[in-house]
Picture 1: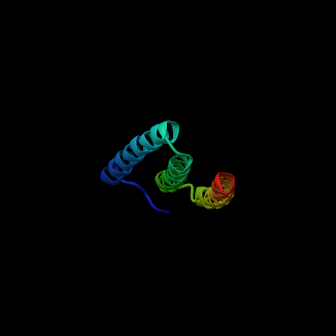
Picture 2 (picture 1 turned 60 degrees about the horizontal axis):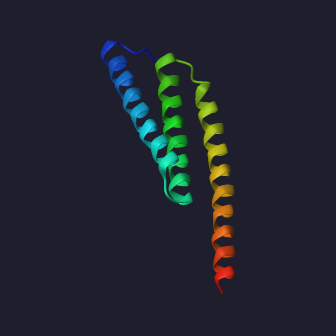
Amino acid sequence: MIHCDGILENIVIAILCIFTLVLLVCLVRAIQGPRYTDRLIALNMICTVVILMICLLSYWMNAFYMIDVAILYGLLNLLAIIVLSRISIRRYRGRKEQKK
């Protein structure tokens, strides 16, 4: 078992706080994003930061089964981004054909 001592625990907490700030900035970008693609990229970044936070929490709490949760969340993120990207491409092509 890995044990977090005082200094390492403080570093993990500081990194989690930084990830929380990054998460909030990405959330603001996802809400304000002028284009659909900006929102899509912000959503992908939010999911990536959440995966990193889950991995750090699993290390901090010595609950390594949470790594499996992070992997599943990453796969769901990949699937969601692929579906949303395909929808975005179809919308773009449809608008392009309507202009012709």
